[in-house]
Amino acid sequence: MLRKTSKFNVVAALLGGVAAACIFAGSALAETTLRLAHASSPDSLINKAVEKFAAEVKEQTKGSVVVQIFPNGQLGDEGPIADGVGAGAIDIGLGGAVDAIDPRLNVLSLPFLFKDADNVHKFLDSEEGRKIQHFGTDRGYLMLGALDSGFRQFATNKPIKKPADLAGVKIRTPPNPVILSTMKQLGALAESIPFGQVYTALQSHVVAAVEPEMRDYYDSKWYEVAKHLSISNYIWTANWWFMNKDRFDALTPDEQAAVQKAAGDTVNWYRGELSKAYEDTQKALETKGVTVTKVDTAPFVDLVKPVYDQFSKEWGADLVSTVQKAASAN
Image (cartoon, rainbow, N blue to C red; front, side, top):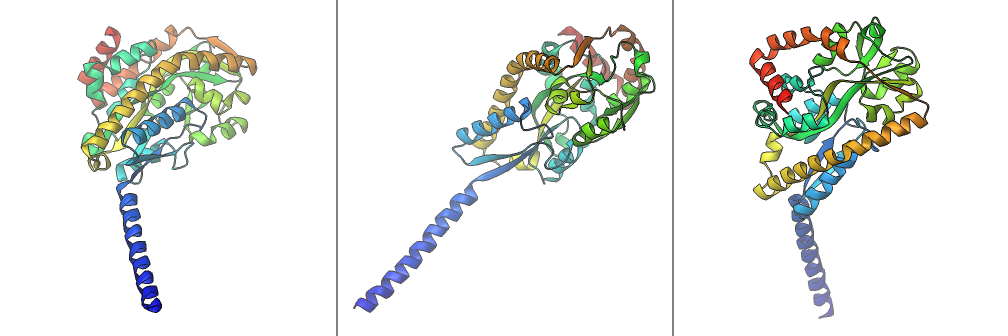
């Protein structure tokens, strides 16, 4: 009897273990993990924003969707991240390299298009802005929103006061066609170098200048090797926030709603943090010995008009003129 009972107990235990394993496996399968990648540092406002997004998605879905964050270019620079999202190797990405998504998104980076962040945000929230945020759906991307990469400046070891100060200067830029074209019009020699290699490129004099967003300049410590920051706001760029559309469509309707709500909440939070972030960053840079000067942009504006002509031919004159009018109306 004891022996039979033992066999029974063993079988029962095995069956119980199998059942428990099945339940565990079922719950594991029910959990969806979304891989989110970006190139900004772990200390950046961008990373804080996506951490907030991840926490809200997990809370709103009661843990059925978990967002795993890969900052600092761990899964590649901005171009490879966009390619990876399109291929389904990455679920969600952020960045300004958008040729894989839709090159027309670069229309918002035309030089001197926006006067300040408030102008940008009003445009993004307008009818025309919302239309642009639907670009890329035909290529398998779903836009979740746009987090300001911000206005770009000039940084080198001498102040940039006039266009002639950029003539012949090797300057690092991202592989953004509008930025490359603008640099050409300003007489600079643009070099597209991956974000993670910029410090070394400046240190070893591969390039003499960068045109960073202020927070990237600070977070990446480029101020150590380029001590003059010239504030021009010459171009605004987005950290476009995009998701693989098939991956989004595979979520339940409730999960989709949670992801989109969390993204919208995060965009609003991020905008609210921007002004203070810039004030704090400029103060921090000045304590590091950086000389911050403001540029008279009028001579620069005159030189970059051919950039608008070039991209009107590439993307359509109607798109460029419509965006210009909508931006100036806000």
